[in-house]
Length: 212
Image 1 (cartoon, rainbow, N blue to C red):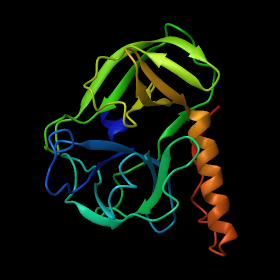
Image 2: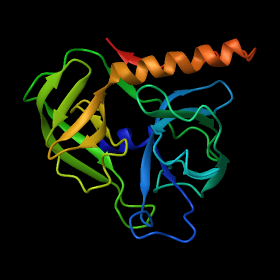
Image 3: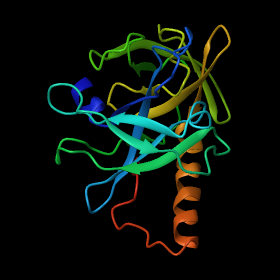
Image 4: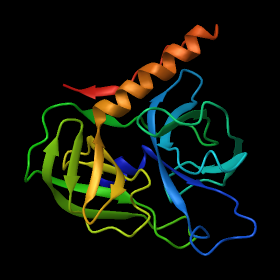
């Protein structure tokens, strides 16, 4: 199951020059929302650092780890209401990535979950799967106790034991807070509406996989 989850997560990093101590190992997760007909992936990530840099680096997953990096331009708008930045990119190797599966049923206190995180160090692998459980649920926010490092609040995806996305961690205040998938799904719908309003044809494959 962990290997299947990894197919839906890209590695995102930024070139910090000079490298400040608090950012030099900064690697965040990008969630593959959908795959377009040409093989491009629509990806959502925490927007915090995209407003600070003009370019960023993406590594797509492959069978052994992550592909060679590709550099992309940061395009506006940078931040959505839920704090997500959405962009499209195409992997070098076709056929390995997959769109994340959304769990839209009610999440309950006590539900076991695991969080996908990249290590603090500047390595492409390994990745971490930190286990825990849901400790509270409030409207579109849930709280969990997965044992993660201090950078994990920057959009680490939260999965149930079936490999379905249940949340995206965005805050650490002594306990982890995560948006539920509804916040991300709403952002994705607004992104698609913006694409269409600009006269760009909406990709036929750009629909998220929602678990009923």
